Image 1 (cartoon, rainbow, N blue to C red):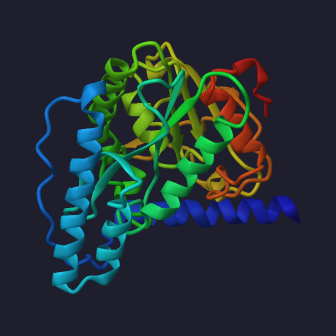
Image 2: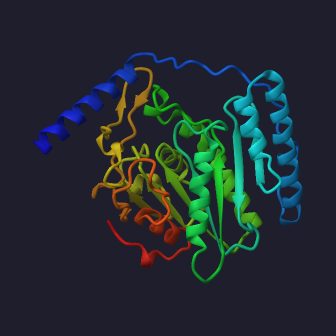
Length: 318
């Protein structure tokens, strides 16, 4: 009965994917909320970080006032929280769905830096859940002795909607990949001796997969991944260690792992990153569901913290 139910569920998901790829979907577009252009800042340097943080906080505060004047109390509250005096913002753009890059810890003096790349439906309006994940990783990675770990919540691209045709293609990831590579180079300049990793959740793993060639990091960790757009680790073209995990209750297990060239587009995200054929280092994520990889005390978060700290021999394998 279990196998039959699993087969039925896969069939239903495959049908839904096919529909998403062939039927135009139009979610109700959110009205455009006015916001200022991002702060014009010089290239980041260790000495200029405090100035950048302050300028981006001020930009978020201005965006909050503009959203409030426009009558959008939800966005105003989100912008106000992001612009809090305690936030270390490397970047902020309140226009449209919005972009923000936030640092947890001391970026310049950290021995390790982990960049968290989010999946679909992440925007300024939903930023708190993404921030909680980054904060949980920061706390877990700094629980023990040794060099400190900084974590960066990088909402540096326009994420696709979960229910959309875009989420089944690499289009948004291809747009984001150069920005992620550039950001990694910036971190190298700010903290040249640090161990650098990227932790990529859901569609964020597609971004990391498309950026992998030329992405100057030591470790790439994929969690809850629907695919990377590549057939295997070798096709990613990276010298980084590639890790992958999927929790026991993650619905993404039922996503068909296909990649098909159609007349106008290539759809599907390719091989399953936790499959033996893909060739990643599969680690234990316990019973995590799709949103549970950063739950405090979980096996998945403990292993992600070990990867972020470069303690690769301590990672428990799946």
